[in-house]
Image (cartoon, rainbow, N blue to C red; front, side):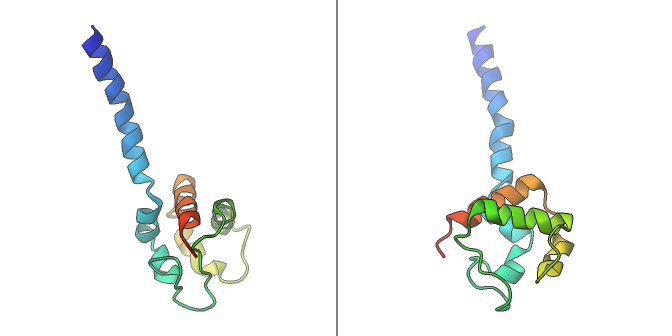
Length: 105
């Protein structure tokens, strides 16, 4: 009986491990094509008018991405991102923003 409980408990953690892996901010930054404009290291944008993201506050980055996605932010270069943001879920936005915040500017 105890072995079954341990096995069951172990299976409960499998989805969490897979979910954590799927929400790897660095991987998502590449997969969602953020690197195309902001650079692979988030420090060297394609054009000087695009922001350097490395080291930005996670809550700020998350809110900017959500605002661009929803259309609440439609100024500056947000139009360039608007077409991509429909491909990014809120959980992925959070993971990317968290990763960006850990980078050294």
